[in-house]
Length: 140
Image (cartoon, rainbow, N blue to C red; front, side, top):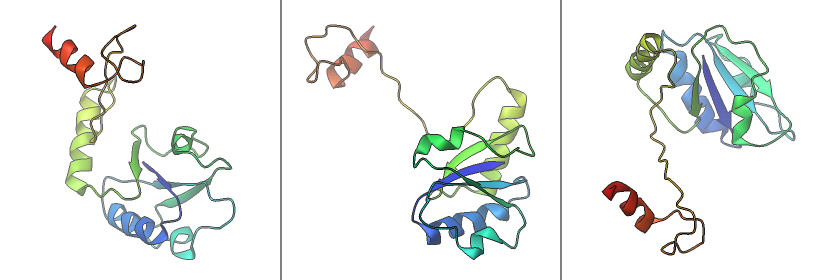
């Protein structure tokens, strides 16, 4: 199951849906629709693949993708943005990795985690996060 946020990019959304609908490993594409002023286009609502479901939310936030309203037909859920296209083979490989290690999160985009150093004198904003602090942590 793919869960995908979108916001006022209907052409990009349809491009993504068309791409992922071709992937055999994708059972369903859930579109997180947060636009309360407009309805999804018919090409999305009645997508020829039969894989697309619309989940409507009242709050416009990227975090809405984690507030699952619709049941998912699979245990594996991949959260993607509507402007990211991954090869079907990459989705299959990621799914197999998750099947082998279901206690782990599997994804494509790396997130950086930086340790916040309390009362650091080197940071610019008082928060302890910055290039100098990252370099200090790497040296340890």
